Amino acid sequence: MSFFVCPICSLPLEGEKSLRCPNNHCFDRAKSGYVNLLSGKGGNHGDPKEMIQSRRNFLEKGFYLPLSDKISKLAFEYTPDNGVLLDAGCGECYYTERIASHFIKNGRKAVFTGIDVSKDAVNFGAKRFPGCSLAAASVYAMPIADSSVDTVINIFSPLAREEYRRVLKDNGIFIMAIGAEDHLWSLKRSVYDTPYKNEPCDYSLHGFELLSKDRIRYDISLESNEDIMNLFSMTPYYHKTSQRDIEKLKGLDRLFCEVDFEILVYTVIK
Image 1 (spheres, helix red, strand yellow):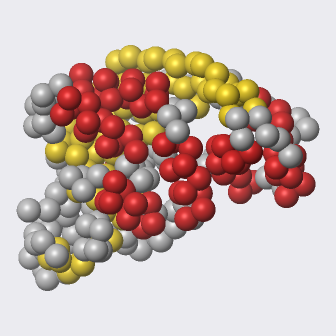
Image 2 (tube, one colour):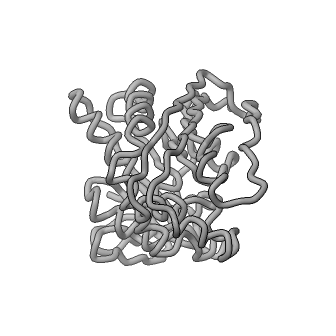
């Protein structure tokens, strides 16, 4: 049985190698296991392969483990037994897989699913976490039934508030991670002549009630230019920065940098 619904008519999708709805709309699974459910609403965009590879290399070195550990604990705390957890903007499933591992370690089960607009990302994700139902889809047009999800996770992904409210059950949980004020400040100072810090977060979110907020702040030591460039390449700044400024980073072999996250937990109000 598929977790997803048809992106054309919103009816349930069924099947193994191919997913088909009662109206006979058909979608083939890739060899890795994910299904492409991108519609005209979402387009076919997403992170390019080089950005995905940089993120994979960086995360695998454990620089963001404190963030991952905290999100895993929160997801475990708020998701009911055998509940459905959706990673909206899952990328290569680094966080999704670690959340699932935390559930297994603590003797509980959940249904894990994820979507990302990048087919390359979910292809990597399907190989990393075969037990996760994955689809290439936009968070702004999610092929997921109304009120079918217990917990939505959003880690540095677009905020599709109305779609999250739609798919969440009554009193469902939304967990969001964002960069706080000092996040990557030293990296910015190394690149830009006039860097700026992140704007303070407005915690109000229409249709949701804030349950908790946590801040995680620590420093990381990047000991090679490869690590520095991997970090920079996985940020939104990479595609907005001039080549002249990027060259400043290419001359660095070491960087001591701040990481500063806020993790917000909301419950949906319907």
